Image 1: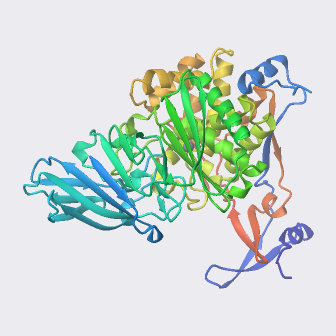
Image 2: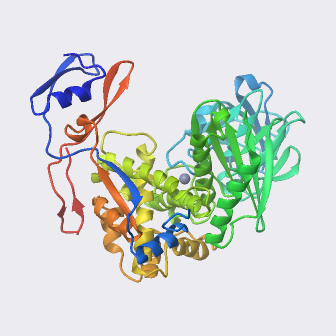
Image 3: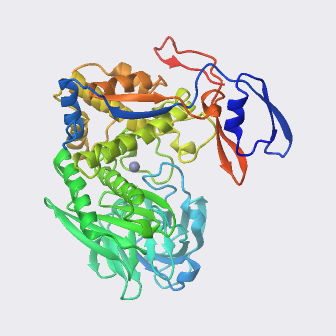
Length: 74
Length: 504
Ligand SMILES: [Zn+2]
């Protein structure tokens, strides 16, 4: 099966099965790579957001830190 | 020290420079060109751009010379009453820290191209420009006349970029007793009302926080490029920002970068140009100036650049979070965080600090430095029960070190942070600044104290989530861009109390 723009679909479709990819090395040689999923997760996405409910102390810290009210006005 | 600069053939990018040194002492005289520029902590080897170099006496007779280093020339003075060096410099690097010459402008960062005599760096420097009268000069240097500038000494000269052009756009505003100038060179139509209003807001917020500004007048020199770009370089009395494309200047995506880099560079006027690590005071332009304090001079500046923008209302809170999120994502995507501390990565900027480097080797004084500053700020606020913050740390450094022209050390920084916190911060510094402890738990805890959550979401890409590699698509090909290392160990304390984490 050819991998072009569908690698995510293929990995998903064959989840749990042994996957062998034939790749090009930087020296233009063919190379087989065996892929096995890990139980550990990699490359997660991180971001910050306000808590839904912050304590009065936390809201005070937020205001002192950013000079903005915790709950935006309006 | 006198320098004459001319550009008889702009199309070939070669600047002609004549330097005159009166009353030489001794039989030989050394002329040095810097090998790096403050603000970029790696060697630049600017002498590679010198095409031709000759020495003469006051009558125009050639003097013998030889190179004794890659950027060091030794002239046999004989009985000359003045030594005149004539050389040229290839000016074809248009960014915030380079030199550029074409038919539209002459732009120099003197640190690239102005020679000095090591034992006479303290002498005043006069720079005259042989340019058409229609050319105006944008610079922080004192103007003796339209095209003649003066710096108090060599350090000021090389900290003072100059844009000379007939097409500069200029506005000024005053904040307290400080005059701020904004100069644009290149094709763009700034919305002056908005630009001045936003610059005034963040400048005033910075001055309010730091009590006063280090100098009386400051210049934002903005080079507009026709392609996507943003980059800034700091100086004490000015900054150069390179931005593009000019047609998008006021579009949200570029404008946010513009304001962000402007605020960052302005804060450097305090943090690095005035508050300086001892090992860089004064700068030694001839070699590497190693420092482990990049997490302060770049990390704290990166943090405050955006913090001042949200505090002054230029950024919304959500915009501020987006800027921090970008740092967080780079940090967590980089498995080098388990390999080299931010302090050691600061030392190694001289090795490979400005490129991606080999996989998983290092961290960044900007990204990890910013997150360290954020955690330090919230920890001080918490430990001092709201009585102090990182603001006080920076004010103390400015008052006790910067204003007195005393360099600060790593232990000075730690002791100021501890004094204001009211308790030891040694473990924090050992684990996170000088060590490679996982930031995630402490970041999460710190943000929670300020009513925020650090949210972690699984990647939606199977290759990233389960297989540990990132891909990009390019011309129909799937290219593997990053592979997570196989992790073989867990944290373990060694005899020195340091934690190790092993990757392979
Ligand atoms: Zn910076």
